[in-house]
Image (cartoon, rainbow, N blue to C red; front, side, top):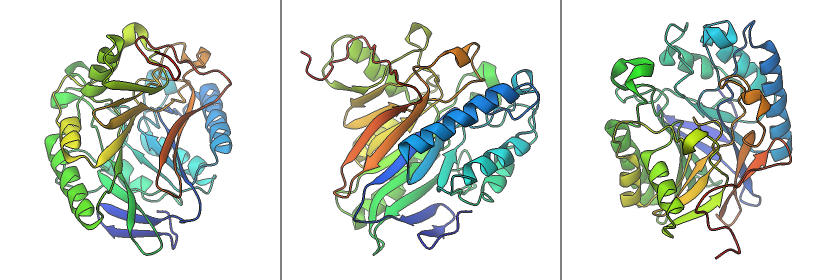
Length: 344
């Protein structure tokens, strides 16, 4: 666990991280690294690790958040199902930057038949020298539901970062049962915790990080394509075939409850490696992080416009700016229905 006088673990589901009042605080979102660390993935892993290094050096973040599928214990691709070994190598790599980092689970971190389940991976991640992680309440669905409150020197909460497990596959049926979602008990927990924080900190705004996109991301995108101006285009594009967004087939309540609460203003996900879209809808900016995958998709090592990170900057006045940090020099902004800056 990250050991610093700036970090306090308040309870089993809450951290407080002190940030300086006289400078901007930068969070780098990385997602879908799909590191195999096996005999079949050595070359692709090397490319991914070099890419992550370049992105971190380019962004110079104060903190890093990995939104799922950091490792890939899928034997046909990596040659191993030992995700415990993969997690250990990931931590060693990330610890080398000496920057505090945290993560949420995706749908591939624990493939069927892999060595460790989520609870066992959680115990490993808690050992990372710069890792901020906890399994959270055991009675909640998923593993790794927790909050990192960014606070000032006096302990006043400036910005809660909510980490949520968007789970894997529905009804315990793995791939063929469709993607799961953030479950209602997680939603209840999240909203109660944020309501309590907001009661003590009027005007509080929060961010949420999870792996799989919400159904409302697709809803907003479809509305934008039809010219609905209730959706604001922020950046990025949809690069998946046929405008695919890998949403759950299960109806979740997280977005609607967040709109009702009014505290969460920013949501960050991964999962669809070729999508980099960021939209503002019903007062919430939903952002796909740029992926760093060289292994998961067939032929993805030849792609380049989606590869990079997403830099989230909170300035000293409390304003938030979100921008892509591409690995290369080219970023795709081809989106139907998007109202670009300066356009009509």
